[in-house]
Figure (cartoon, rainbow, N blue to C red):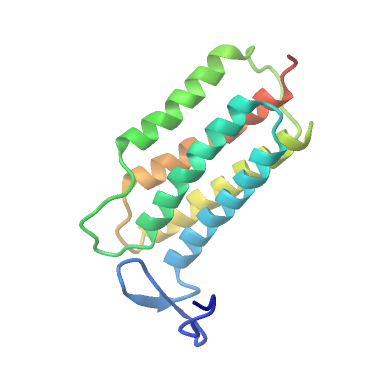
Length: 167
């Protein structure tokens, strides 16, 4: 099987639900940005020194594949993201927060390779959230996707703090 299909040569792409839409549509921008988040998290996963961070990141990456499926679907009966996905991120955040000292100053990105990669993922997650908000103003988008992306930027921040913490 060839990697290229030539079906997108005229500027359209196929969605998971079968529709063809323009490659520069808000929907494609939204799930494309989530794909960028996933790639940034992949870089973070191989850059992090803490195995607990790597495990959490891998779990989140699998969830982001579901976010992309959700965003690449129009009028689907199935929702890929649910409250449990959001709660999982909140659990990760709360567990990390309980282990770290209170934050009393701004953190400049880049303290080490893992934290820097997580900062990149955090800022990309924020852009992804903005893209999905733009999309939600024109088309139906699951609120769970918006909440999950909001929690994701918080989780990336907390994971960066873990990577910066002294053992």
